[in-house]
Length: 458
Image (tube, rainbow, N blue to C red; front, side):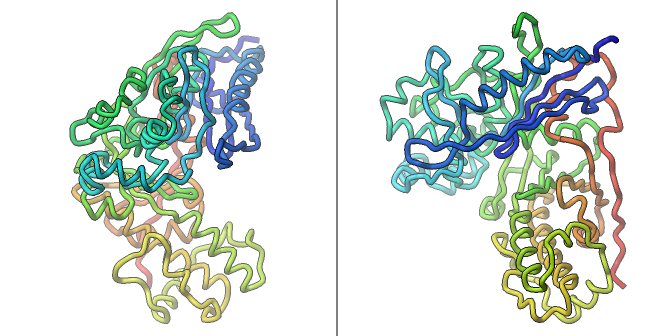
């Protein structure tokens, strides 16, 4: 039997580390998932286990290379982008893989922003709110001042996707999707590294920037492969939509965070947008993507638990609630709905008395109504100045009929679709180097859409 030509994609998340093999039509023909316990850094803070991750990459690749039914033509990587791996001149890692949620020292924070123009000016230039260690360039700044001897030993600071690629290619490089994801390293007003990077001698620790669709030739287990340089996961997830749709659109990627991405908005961030958790990403082609973030998935989980406990129900009950417009009409008539300033940190539902609702389904509809009020405000921030025709929703909320119907109601002039595709981040990572391994035309059926009409509540 002739082996199937495939691309191997490592999709490394905080919880799951996945390996996919895709055929030439981008159908998953093999999938493997791994989890390993976190470890701690020198301060006792939890972090990913870099050694386990490294071993998993090698072991998994050896395993799939041995599968006779597949012929691996290319390899690429995607991962969360706010983490850096510090390597010495021999390529050995020098530190744990610090958690991007690690608390940032206030003294260093003040020193940095006081030196480089203040918070307001700097956040405009870096196109990111102040996020502490999540601004990954701040991690390097911290090492320079807290551990100068370690700083001297660093040959390169590689973002995690590029480190994973480096494990196979041995070529240190940087990628614009990782540099451009709230790192504080990039000046979006000049589209180059921010001047502090040179001022603080950080530039020498950064590898050369290669295009996101670049491939490197690498030998592994006696075979040669085309290997991508790795992509930031949020930017990778956008690629299938950019390939399939050319009319202006917004993608709301839902999960713990609901991130609205507008690749057609090149307008610089305003003070209002920055104060409401907006930021800019970059596509693998180096174009700006304006984004807004909402912690709606987490909020949903917490409030569903509250509803279930109050009404003595299982939380599983709320995975497939049907939309009932009569309930919405009743809620709008009997309960105050947010018409003013929206709090993006907590929905109005957190302050609602559950005893006021007739039953748990009514309470659940109000929860989603309050979340949609937040979502509308958050997404509206990145719509300004662009003629968006469609909104696509992927992830968990795309399967929630109450959420989708209400979203369509709140955006009457825009077509709203639930988008379904298997592993958008991994597919996007594969698509970025399509021409280097795949002779077939790009498939036009990558994404399955379900339209939600704007039906006014009667």
